[in-house]
Length: 102
Image 1 (cartoon, rainbow, N blue to C red):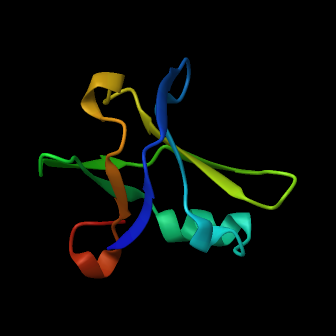
Image 2 (tube, helix red, strand yellow):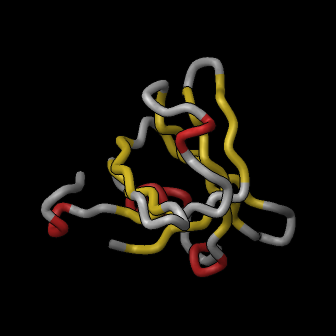
Image 3 (cartoon, one colour):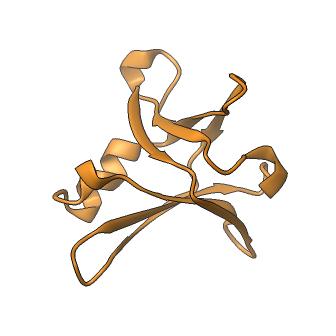
């Protein structure tokens, strides 16, 4: 599993469902397609109390600032609500070799 980001914001989009937003400076040098591939089709969300949930990724949006900093937005669909993911939660990428991922 790879650390992707901590949740800095979350909101419900009318068509994409719950969207998690965050940053990861180590991804700033990657192109958008590389970031999407790294995120994959499934993520694990770890809360500060130790609880975890696995979620399917519906969509990924990568926004860049004028300074080249990357903001990541991961849409989880309508199976999650804002109360299901706390601010500060950790988002990890799941991969095929984890036995649970994409």
